[in-house]
Image (cartoon, rainbow, N blue to C red; front, side, top):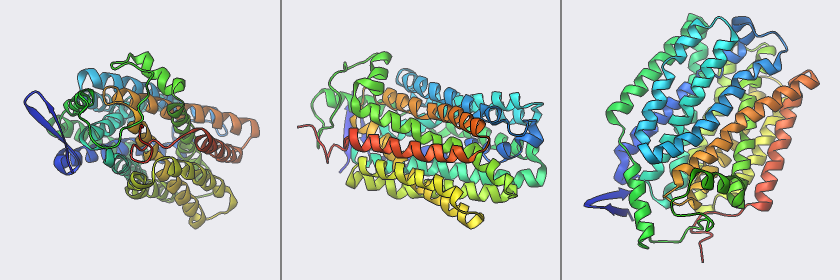
Length: 436
């Protein structure tokens, strides 16, 4: 059954099938977003010492570009959500791609590691604007009973893009050298994305406004979501921020889980390539092991997002946190490409269970009038986890003198965060836990 919302004389059908063409455009956009992120995740960490002059054992300096990325992307997620409610989703998406254009040039001409950090700051702005908008736009277009599937498809496309880029850039760096290989890849991706957005992506804000109007008129059908009561109909930025961060326990629990799970991605971004490079693996082998993590994470979300539409969000989130932490710990319990690929797959499947369902949980209980802001603030806390995790990982590795302590730190953090979701969170799916 399709949901129809009317604003003025125009009808806005909500559902994947009724908006399939635009939905597919948005999926390809997030694939390109993933490619842009993935080009920084194999070659640069592995060759930080030989190509960009990072001294051996300088864990804090090595993590600097991930710290910059995390704090910038987190802040820009927050900004993107608010901007999109005033100026539209497409405008923010276009701005995000325009900001990415200098990145390939900065990598190619980089005389020092500082240029890589600066390029990563621009990457954080790009990711904050573009990934947020592709997700928000698809939620505008689809029904409440399709949220798990929608976000699963979104994250599938994005993280398959990350995995593909990690592998392709490994081959391109081997064939053409790291700088030229990354330049060619990055220039093609960012220019293509900008052109495709300008020509084919549609503005979806009217769908969200029509949905909000229907709720206000009392015409919504189906189970009633458990929207927070202690917030105004048109809340200020500070109202939504405080609600997401501490005033609503459900939102706060989701936000802390999002922040902690990014410790895993920070570890895999920097410590994985460096760890495997020290074990004698080639760039292409590293790309494939990291790619296993990305492919399993991305591919499994085709199933795990839809799963939560049936069994709820909370169980997959808790299982995913614990399984992901176990996969990180397993990395140190064996050796060889086969074992490390297996541990990467376990970690990726855990991420697939938790990742789309944290976002779906936010969408379940965020009112359409401020859903874009809520998603942006959740993504602020989640992606700030890159920066917090990178700082803590660098500190742990510096104090201990090796990377292994960082792996165990992340595994323990994931277990404790999952325990918080289990004890203090609640099911958000409107059908399974509706407002009475």
